[in-house]
Image (cartoon, rainbow, N blue to C red; front, side, top):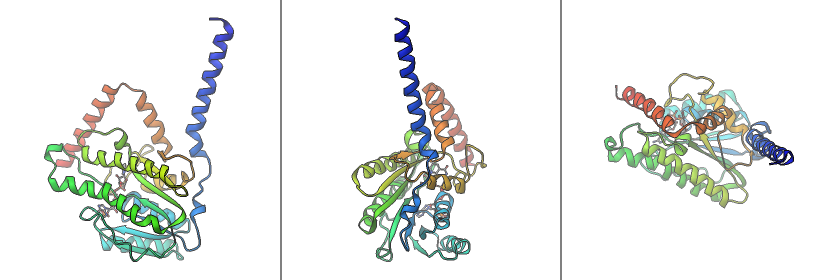
Length: 289
Ligand SMILES: NC(=O)c1ccc[n+]([C@@H]2O[C@H](COP(=O)([O-])OP(=O)(O)OC[C@H]3O[C@@H](n4cnc5c(N)ncnc54)[C@H](OP(=O)(O)O)[C@@H]3O)[C@@H](O)[C@H]2O)c1
């Protein structure tokens, strides 16, 4: 192979790598376009908004001028979040919708359908860690109802009432891309959230739909301490809102998670499988204590 040939291949490789690097970092560097959804008297609907990521996103949306429709299953916690939002943002209007999404996937939206709704955040989701044979019938049904049926029904019911230009954020998970052991049902529903979101992004013309592939975030469910790789829910929420307008159908909003995922993808699969299984076994043992 002549010198010119090697040189040309080198240049092409550098160009491809530069393109891939720019494509990777660009969504994290460009400014958010969240403000374009801030129509006059605009409301954002957030499911599972009484704790963790949902609460943090609701607080952050209120800080950005949105009125908030909070969904949760605990009326005391809904009241607390409402008060917290109104204390920090005196002009914010807050509406609470009380509904247990694991029992019934249909949330009654009759009280909100005449409002100007420009943002929907399908955040609610949870799931037990266990060997599949030890799940009860109810645990499986409740997890699938809450994580998959509930956001699908909510999105379908709200779509006719959302503003012409709207934003839908679906909180999916790394577990949906790389399903760990002892989380089969949860991981299955998170893969569903991702596929649902991507399909919808391709279907809807004027609505921006993004699947938020979420790594480890410190919340009431994930109580391991906050660290660089495990941000607080409020740090994560700020990254989520910064990613709006990125042009991607799915993304890890917190860039250290994206780098971590890329590095892990370079490792041998057997090594990752063993490490994940050991880590999850530890969680399972701690959870059973
Ligand atoms: N934290 C992580 O590391 C992580 C990683 C990947 C993906 N995610 C995803 O992020 C989303 C939020 O998780 P999180 O960690 O923030 O959880 P969280 O702190 O446990 O908060 C979950 C929220 O959903 C509500 N909720 C739970 N079950 C409900 C039900 N049956 N009906 C109505 N509301 C219900 C909770 O209400 P209560 O306040 O009454 O409990 C709370 O408001 C989930 O979709 C999860 O899969 C989280």
